[in-house]
Image (tube, rainbow, N blue to C red; front, side, top):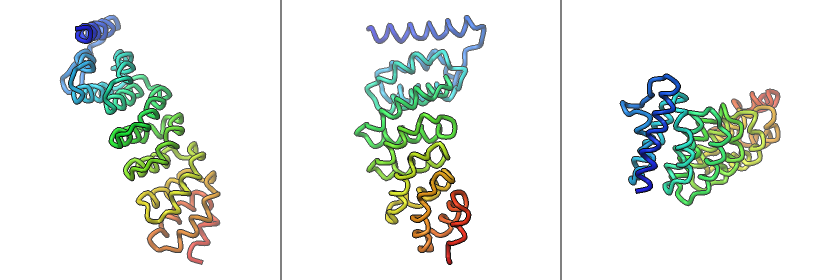
Length: 231
């Protein structure tokens, strides 16, 4: 009963907040924001997941839902927590809070939850510098999907991810790892601050399958070193 009462009270507060601003209530797929907020308290986790996701899809005009997304950070379902954190970033445009809670999700025992979290971080990579500590955790993940996505997200982050260079070098050395070539690309995106990776990249260039990737990376890290490939 208490949960039901809270859900209806949430709907009332969201609608009241929007009305006080003199704006039309935003919606997604025909579902008003207040109804999506109510669904965050639904007994079915799948419905809560969709609601958390769809609030984010509305964008910053759904900012009135931010306090209810914060409540969902403690949801019993891992995917609800991830989607709530990501949507909170979208509606508030404050990535620091989302990065913290997504980092917590990277410790979840469920690989699908960790993958969802690192996918969210990847979307944030170009705009939110606070995601780096979370990416450092994901770069150690044993699940190949999580690791690959973390490597790609680190590349998107670019030069601000220079602390991840040692981890990326370790991955780039493992030629059997599916994230090996993406790690080389990510090192290139970090640029000159990844110069310690040059010897590893030159070694990898001896293998034809990596040569083009290495040259592309070295041109961004150390153009002079790129000239040594094939010599």
